[in-house]
Length: 221
Length: 201
Image (cartoon, rainbow over all chains, first blue to last red; front, side, top):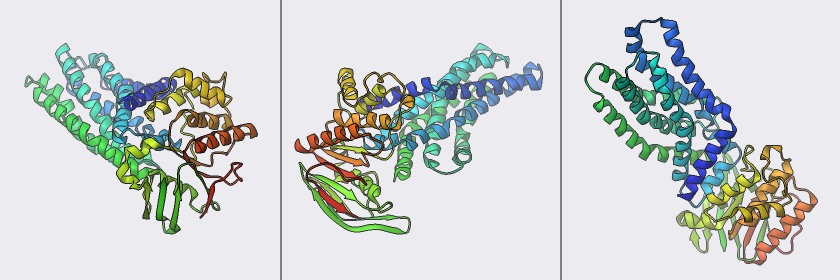
């Protein structure tokens, strides 16, 4: 457990020292979601309708931005070898790395989303549902993204390949995440969508680190 | 006691070596020699358990390393070609992180002492980015001084080190081997250490 905490701490420390990487994803998210109201004009009904979709698609793409750098630096400087040789199981350490990725890219998006949602004329209830959906959905994006990042490790032009691999896998998160807010707005209640997101997250927490570790072991050989 | 039986390594289509047999006991060290591309690094990575051999097996105290898993890794210290040192972190942070990853308790004072031993006094708080290649290497070698491992597998440990650092490292390896440890290293230079077996591949 100590080793896992050390991995998380080190990755957060590294993120603090390379601030530009953290802020790129956040700025991308803020700018993309702010451009839509400017481009579509001030029509509250329309904006309210597209808000969940726009915010979720922007969140997906913002998470994608840093994915290729999730394991590449560690692979290049040999840290990944040392992780594999640690007495602690590699799968746990990788879970730590994914957790750190979520804290540096996913969590800022969740915290920023309510402010951005105001531009789309969403009320407090809808904003609450959106934050809940993102809170369940963004860790899912990090977990699935890690599989793609591990599979494309060391591949030339890996950045494009990651998008091709990962974006289709993000579709369920997008559907249920954006659907939660829509369901709330239409009066159906978001509980069903949120439960499905939570179920997907539980599934990913178990299987994604395992798949990621298997892919990393192949890359290390 | 590390024993290799009929080891073979295949890279792509090429067979690098096959039928390799050797045994290194406590208090011994092994110098792996061979031309560039002979498969020295591949051999060390196989011995560390990072890559599976194409054929043969590796035994640690008579047990296959694959079955030992965590127990083997706890006894092992592998330093590869790459530094595994983060440029943005300071030498002290790098060393403390490596120790936590190895699950060995290392106090900050002990880490500072190890860095001072390798001539990094006064540079503990400087990001590694600002250090020279040799000093980066010294950060890595400071790990040897703090880690309690029975088996050291070192790939070209003398690269980029100045004369003084070479002496320090040699002393460290002698101390380790005399204390009943095992060291396996590759180097193109002659290694200024007493005893030792030579394995040519």
